[in-house]
Image (cartoon, rainbow, N blue to C red; front, side, top):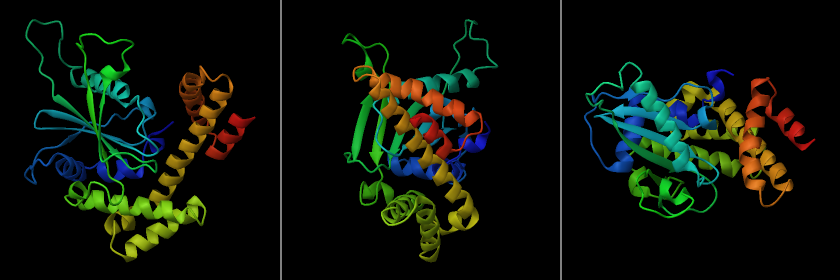
Length: 272
């Protein structure tokens, strides 16, 4: 599997230092100079943790993991972020001797989810790793994820501070609206043409229009395939369905992708 499976409209747009910093400043209200040093450290492993929409960067000794989640805010996001950031720290400290007496300094982590799904969610949700612990105790390991709803018309103060976020939300909203009357492929094409004509996301779509259409088909079809795999898991037993659907299902989808099957073929295989 090559890197193209991991690319999405989100990573393509916000995977640049300029747009990543713009989105981060919009969400946090912080200000950095235009020449601020931003080091992109998004994990390059194909589909690491099955994330299609992740961006990671280091700025001002902070390691920021920025993720967009499309369908719903997965309750396992804090745990997935923990595994993700552990991998980041492993790479960052690979050249250092962690067994030496002198303390190794690492960037302070910050975790942000930009929610752009169709299901209802509050403007702001805070998700904690400790909520996943088997039983309550004095917490000595915590990870907090800040999730912001960036759908059109939500968190307008945040979105208004970033033209990229505003245009991205407008474009995705138009694709979804078009899908009510046409296929995803046609909906994407129509949204690209319309947004360019209205100067919404225009520069980005002019440069990457056909690529964006393919990314939408890839990302959204993968979501459908995973939903099919989850449903198959639930049929195996209501009590264990969630675990079976999310673990076995995701692994099977990724294995089929690695073997070169397209998404329609994957869905047929999962249903057979």
